[in-house]
Length: 273
Image (cartoon, rainbow, N blue to C red):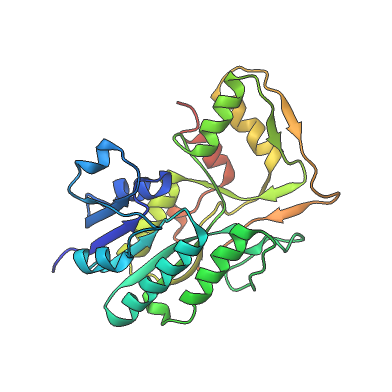
């Protein structure tokens, strides 16, 4: 049986590249890059793709993927157009799309965590973009799509951890949100979960975060304690008087026990380095 051909759109970004590294030893995996980074130019498995200038069809026709993973970032209108073209491609070919969505599709609901089949509603431009693309995917057969909603993602090379380290070194305040209750993940766990979904041909809506919740302030402080012995300055930001949830918990589409994660696992794992 021929190996699945996988195309990761946004393969040079933090998450896209982590997914590429997880999958490339198991599948015929390709990625796109937009930056002029030499490391990608010389990699035969990476294709240059500019979201705003290039038509995604060209790359889809060239690679003919069985699985597309969309980790695209950039201009919102261009993202919408690219996903419209991807949906056309899915309708005409044997192919499945996994779309990296966000807990922000629920950011208008503040009073409780969100589950897979809850109605989406967002107040942020980012959340509204993700909802718009999700709604396109909900109109195609479920066997052709996976909506992967992610909470905040941490991990060694993650932009969030890099930013925290920079703030510590520069003696700048780290913003924490004492009233924000969330769940979290890291690149390691997330890529294993995505690998499992592809391997088992799982489709539908998945909430890929820790199975438990934590206050943003507590989590960030524990992470900083792991980074080293510092006395950072914290800036406590109150966006509301009561607790506010931004958490995507699994209820209907749970993963096997060995792929579940707690927020403490995320703190204990690879934060240092």
